Length: 414
Image 1: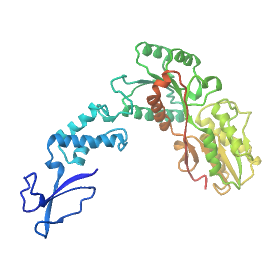
Image 2 (image 1 turned 90 degrees about the horizontal axis):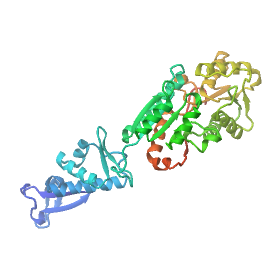
Image 3 (image 1 turned 60 degrees about the horizontal axis):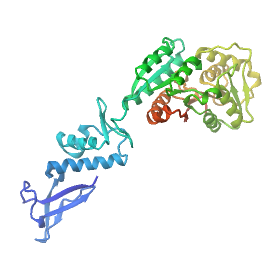
């Protein structure tokens, strides 16, 4: 911000607002370094005091000046979602609480900001009218299954990301455990009371309740889920998920290309994400090989998948040509395979590099490299898409958003 300062001769009374013109120099600058100035009347260099322009400006002119500066900063996106706190503004502008309050009130009257209790002054988006629509309510139906540690951890992170965004953007949220709630009854009751503005559905291990989905669509409520869907659902439900194509492409850049590459898969590829990962593995690893055990019964849960990965690599060890890159179709399978290879004392990453797909915080212990898919990021972006596109969602527009995953390097790769 360009600041206005008066340089006033030391012998003048500082209480006088306008000293004689030959002793005053008005300057607009960013960095004040002058301490002496040439006196045109006497021809000598005189010492000058630096007097802050803000401290001698009349109150009305001062708060309008601050309001204009804040408005320029808001319109040029110098702030993120909220104005700085009142103490921060008081310190920055070297002004009293009353002055800052009046300046902020000017922005409120222009519909540039809105005060949110406990949060501060939120900057309104372009064309957003704070009085036009009541705050939206998001109903989150999610699996909170204590018997599946990985799913419980993911659900917790997803809820944390969703609620963090909702809190910052004045969005009400209701959370229901789908294992303990009558989904249709809850939605019907809330819909009659006009409380629910959008529904987020995160089913346990992708087991969709078709009756629930049909009922939501009949009510014309926006419905968003987090998984890739079969083709028959893609025109009905919006999705926010990670891109399996990007995941396999990223892994193709991380492997050792001098090694043969293997993909360890589950016995049955019943879910879209499994089939997509296999499809893109074939695309980006044309010389790669796929290993699975079709004779294994289909079970679910992290502990089963770890054991399955252990047994799968044990059974097919003779089929693997070392040195090798091994990719688990998910992190649990990769972790199980790594445990067996460590037991066999096969050098990692010297003879084999191992990669997982999915969150590995609980399993990784800085050992397993993995493409991370944070639940927090999914929850945050789901709420953001609802907030920024609610009108389109209510009009039936379908969104399929794919987020970028991140590579978390462990000791299992170079």
